Image (cartoon, rainbow, N blue to C red; front, side):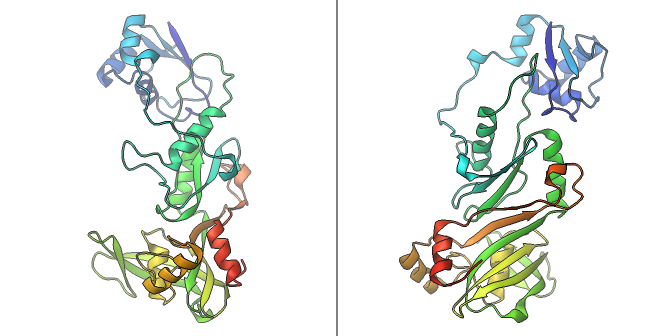
Length: 333
């Protein structure tokens, strides 16, 4: 008999999914058959697989070692990846509590991998959690695999959020999808951003899939999506400006396309920026990508499902090149 105790990382999921993570090589029909025959039990009782697990629940397997090893696999049969994944550096951890990990994604880094050989910030954050996990539970556990709950474009840096357990991940995913959190970006733009342009801006974006480029319209057109933002001017020297943008919707290239439409493209943006100005700033400051950072997250005052985050405001640092540009152009933030 083998005993697995459900830990906090696995509570809230259905028993059948939990079992399929353990017996990953077994067909579902086998799992359900073992449940019917009470060869797999939940808290020493017969179960049908639909039960929602709680921390401390006990799952028992009355299977032969040969059968269990056949479907669960043995450690010596697991093929190790050829690429070593290093954990996220400590200086890139912006916030951490028992449920949540927030890190700073660099320019050029993927939020999540797009191919089997990719290593994104998601994998590096998972590796950090593995190395720092407290493993004092008795009995065996099945590791819940965390994942980041928000994404940034490859060449946009800033705050990336991960839930450490199933409950936190579900709460955070819902909060991001429902726009319960206030998401703010800082952008350095070309030109003087007039105060008259400040406030809530509603536009419509139509994406060209071939060029991965979003065209902007003031009213709805076929195949367009609504893009709403709030923009505030932080400072300007007449030639350049620093603005703070709150995303009210989260559409692809929304900030970059909106600012270009308003006549103030983001500095260093290869797609929507000013080519001549980009060349000047590349030579002067070494800027090779847009000066756009996911800078701040504000949580609701009554964020009761993750109370440690209630009313919290989490901010990150700007990159060295971003800071250099702002200092040299006397644009304070």
